[in-house]
Length: 531
Image (cartoon, rainbow, N blue to C red; front, side):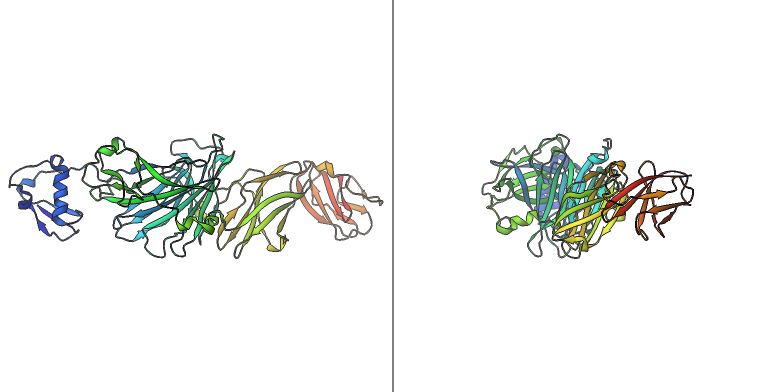
């Protein structure tokens, strides 16, 4: 028997050391813990490869519990925990050379980062909000999870659909500057009657500041206004069992964390409740604490047996509140790429509205766009391959010049009378992308409610009516005045310009039309017939 600590070079013949006589047969299950522990002690490290030679090996087969280890799960607990608004995890990968995935489990999905093999460090951050499972029916459009903001250069609105359907930021890696093995993330929740809103922040390992990674909303099916319930964690090896054939290699990670109540008081996470189930006997799992007693350790994989259920584990020496949760650092957990809120529209007519927004922070190099339509929309995918919402019927760029004294005014014209419209604002800048917190709506007025708004002593006369080609208008000097034509349902048809107090309507189909004429003192709507 040859054992090697490398992929290529065998370095120890241990047949005699193990006392295995030639021609004898052994069963790995019976040798189990002592056999492989002995091998590891002899070579002084992890087992990378076993090579068995000799006639006794002819016709033999390999046996082990599972090619890929099962994931190790646990639920974290804080003493005296009430109305948790923010949960913070600091997660450290101990097995640098092995690939693994370590996460914070939440009520909506996961927040985590995968470690790359061969000591390349963490790769990317995952903030996933589930909408529905792979075998579940698709819910109504307005009940889908949706992002409302992302931070970081190149970050965009994405989605996924491998095990279910949901949304996640894509396009930005907070850890691409240098190999790191520790990531610190914060989850904040604001409960709502329709949607619960979540924010994911990461502590930047380069400049040591909290930064937004993503924010999104998930439909609140229960309607209960609860803050964060217990959060958990898990360690897993990604990939199909027949591909990720490294079950003999042990992965290990460390957790520590804190939870902030909505009154600002912090509690340390000092207990973990291991998820000990039937899988545990098929794949080695371990839950423990480090020698200092201030961190939890999860282990997965290897040849050892898991042993009995350890029950709830309580830290002997929980960590004090770290510097990155004190002082101004706490304020960073509320920062967005842009800050604005929707105000009440200042004017609504049958075919026009003036929307208002209070702008507090535009960020660097901002671009503003308004989305609107007659269907309820959520948010729109920025990357072509990750389109989330195709409901919005109209969109238009908004010039920065429309902001005055911190208030943005946006006019939407040519609207349909007596119709409900939905709208949402988006600001894209160097810091990220931010959408309006909610989809807002307004109702245009009934078309005929505006007929008598013109207040003037002059008499407006339009003739002949009915007509076949031309309308004459008697009302002072009207040249170059725009007239808007609507059909009998109040839908906008076209605009015409008055020339020599006349309007040419030769190109209009026969029927009933309403003309809207606007003047400095008001406007007038007149019914005409084209025949």
